[in-house]
Every structure is written in C-alpha cells, then in structure tokens.
Image (cartoon, rainbow, N blue to C red; front, side, top):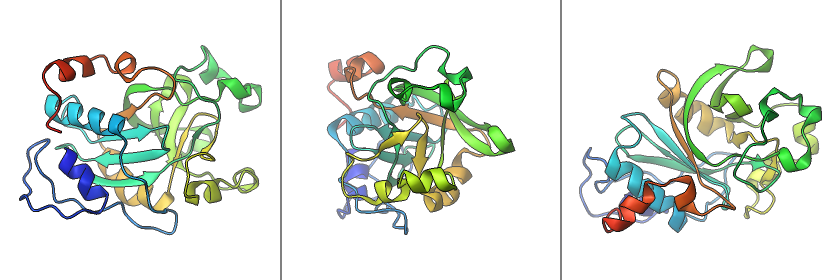
Length: 229
C-alpha cells in the first residue's frame, strides 16, 4: 500500500501491478481538475490506515475513502485496494472527533460553532436523499454528515468555499457544518460510479484523539509488525 501512495505523489513505480490488496500498484496521480491543486501527499496516519485496511480486508470488498482531517485530504480506493486519486476537501468548522448528541435532528441555524465537527471513525456510506430530494453520499446519516460537492448558492460564495479548497494549505479548509465537500468533477467521475450501487466505507482520521482510539484494530497491525511499510 505504501507503493500506491507513492504513486499518488507522482513517483514512478517499477514493480508490476496486480489485483491483490496491498500489492504494488501502478496508479495515476491525483486527478487534476479545475477544482484541485497539488496535494501534499499522504500523512503517516493515512498510510497506516491504508495499510491496515488493505492487509485486513476491513473494507469488505467495497470501495473506500480515507479522509485525513488534519491535512484536509481525501484518498479514494477501489474494492481491491487500488489507489485511484487524492483531492483536497472541506470539513467541519470545529476541531473534534465526536458529533454532539442530537445534532442530526437540528436545523442548521440551531447548530452552534462548537457542534460543527466532522466526526472521526469507520462509516458504511450509502447514497440517500437529503433536503430538496437531492441524492448525497451519507457518511453518517444519524448525525447528518454527508460527502458531496460544494453546494451552489450565495452562502458558499460568501464563505469562499471554492477558494478555500484551491488554497495551498489546509488551514482554511474548515468551513462546513460537518459535511465533507469534495471537488465536483472528482465526485461525479470517481466517487459516484464506485459508491452508487452498494456504497462503501469512509475512514475519517481524528484530529484530536489518538489514532488507535478511533481505530482499535491498528494495535493488532502494530503488534504484527505493520502493513508492509
């Protein structure tokens, strides 16, 4: 899996590709669109989670996404663990890894600044209807956290969401109520085709809790000597 991440960073791989999870992968760099800028590459935490998922088959033969909140980055994988791309994301305003109890039933105007978190954890994401009968990829329906493109309208323009996504740092990528905004072209061309039929898993890395607290099975990976890095 480390080889797949190196490929995303634009490095050339000499090992042949195959379809085994965690095998050396000849994958393309992050898809370039008008909505994306050069990404910093995967963090150690993201690589560790990717190694664990590929080695253990935790994704259950479904596509999966890793969200690195600290770096405001998304990594997309197919069901076999092949890395397909990396893009910047927008996440919740507030740092924190737990959703406030009952936040999913509140109107947006009732949600306070400290409640606008993107919760960390392992989620089975599936498509469903949101307000206005729009289909979104629900990461956690109970807390109203979805993954979707930047919503159109005056509010997004006022908040300069597109400019925040295009900026070279992750410091200004905290702007949503908790949902995960992704580039629209990447969403329609890469995420939707993979997740439309059966859904898939979304692994949201923490920004305040220890990684092992959110993903306890990583302790087993560490005891077994890691995931091949």
